[in-house]
Image 1 (cartoon, each protein chain N blue to C red):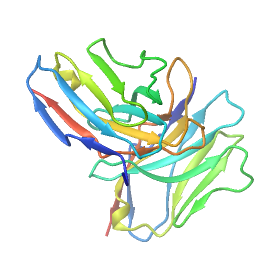
Image 2: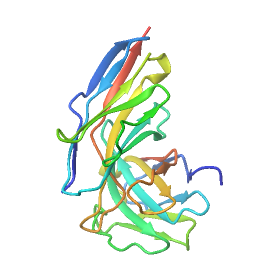
Image 3: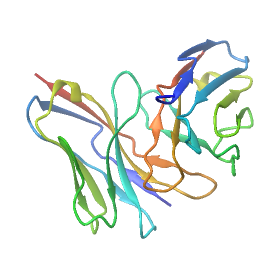
Length: 115
Length: 116
């Protein structure tokens, strides 16, 4: 696609429910990243994929968070038993490679609100 | 570990004036790059400019330029002739590898408001 696409753009859920956030990276981008941004804050790194492999998941906030990626395309971030503290914008980004001079292209994010 | 510091939480600037957004960093890498992103109220992160640590000249992209001072570990963003549309959050970022993490480490950002 032309850019990184995320869906849904907004998600309102009740505490305790599971949610699934989707990210479609730019075609051909091997690296994919998930960030969380709380209101008025900077970006908090969650997890990255090189291809469909996530070498380390220690950046995820708790074991309620998990992520998968299919080949070098779609990724899903799943939050189980959501809590109010999970309310934030979840941003996905992709890049052509993991080289340190590669810029990240971001999606518009999913605004998650946990009531 | 990498660290990015942006000391200006918010700034008000008159339209058409130049503005400098501060960014200092700490890294143990010998070769690295600095990125600046803009985040308007719509929420999307927009890449503005990149500076490589071994680039001989400061990076420029249209009205954006970097005042890169390697010895001081600072990479300040300069916006010339500011416009109302420049009102947004601005984030400085440094590539980060370690502890299983990857991608970019971001500063806390500067909220820039351009006044007419």
